[in-house]
Image (spheres, one colour):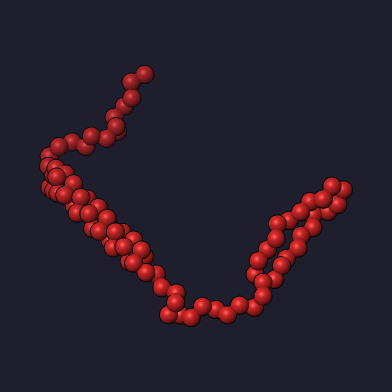
Amino acid sequence: MMFDAWVLAPGSELTGTVAVADEQEAPHPDDVVAGWSGFIVVVALAVATGLLIRSMHKRLRRIDFDEDPDQDEPDRGDDGPRPG
């Protein structure tokens, strides 16, 4: 279906026309394919995702954190009396 532009004539309401395209046959399913460009886009996205996951994994391994924090240290929260 093809639509024409809506026209606003001076002193009239908004009017529009709809032009119906002649009945056309749908393309044959063998004629409609993604082609090489679609394949290249999918492969590029897969490679980029793999590289991002690899980079994230390397950065997470570099983080230094205590697996077993000392239980003897007092809590560092602000539970004491406030001056003022």
